[in-house]
Image (cartoon, rainbow, N blue to C red):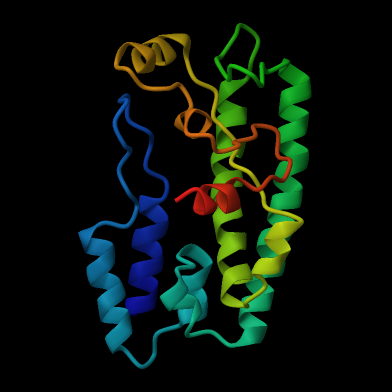
Length: 193
């Protein structure tokens, strides 16, 4: 029962809508999620494999066997491949400006932003089992980049007026790609700290 409670609660929290703010968005993992995960840790019947599907944090993945980690890796990679095709189709269909990522007339921002959010989550969920399996060397050849969301011009202006960058990852020297190609943004960011 604790497994189902955590998975249902956390999956619902992952669907929180973005707020109209230039501050950080709410995290899906809040105090209630932490409490539910703690209860799971005390229950011998917890399905860590089920939890890892929505919350692939290192301590959760450490409770899985190698086959389960490999299955997650394969599933998330297949999802990334499908999302890459859908992002490319959305880009081609509405001529999104990949340099500014500011919505223009004719852009389907709803579709793009839905796929961008899915890509970013799937990327994180693919990276986690790669690291858990000790396959970090893959990152030298392939590391999915972050897909930026399309932003309204008024929100972009708000970011600038507050002294921030439209896409903070770009201003910090991290290579953030908006078209699904792989890049070494995490590796370079880690090396610079």
